[in-house]
Length: 322
Image (cartoon, rainbow, N blue to C red; front, side, top):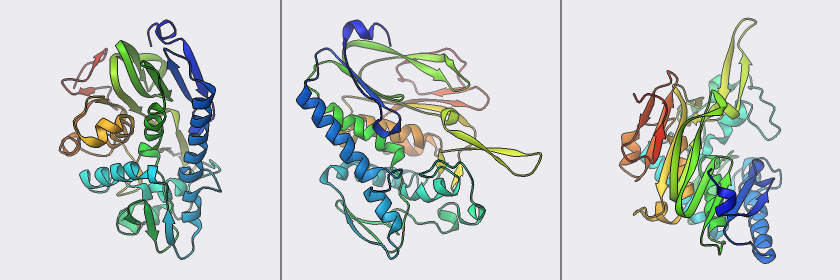
């Protein structure tokens, strides 16, 4: 990002937030009271929604032998609304119940990266895995289950936390960077490199963002190999199609941009959460399906190094468009 240190010289970091860390650059200092409130929010957020914490509410749902009724904080309502919208828009390809598939594929709380022997018979909604809205019913911010359900809100969760933190800032200009998910409020556009998933030291383009959220998804930083036999290995990553429970193929990276002046309520109020969810959804759905529900621009990079880009995506790209 160009000259960010000069334009927004006050930096506040939360190095352990959601496992990736977050950094806030602003044009005015964040006082101790606000920073303390942010730290408390991050702790509360992880205590409720992290499937990597044994003491979280999500973990309790996964351990409930006969299910139960689980009350979430009021601030979870917009996040659940967004998952409802994504689930409906793309017929269940994004589903918080995908947590069970991630665990079977080795992306578990201990990060074993070991696929369970019974995974092929159980992956995905097609093979009987729990489904959002059917096996997990929602009443406001109360979720009701009838058996243990492994939930994962990672598709939108990091972006949603960025939005909640952004609401706490008093600065007129700021950038929140959460491992590639960006919320930007600036008087003049800020240049952001679009990382090449095959070479993290290079960019495939430069985005120019003044006000809005830009989120990226790619398996390049979170993937592992599984041996099929002595001669063959297959690559596994965390971007799954919840219908079949398998890692998405053919797409190498995606970027979704939601402007700050978006007209739809969820996008206007929580642009980073929406952009985060859409960047994931671009791996597992047709763009036309998403555009019926969401107002956004995008770019995707496929396995042949071809870029598909929407007309108003705010970036100059260095690779050939498909």
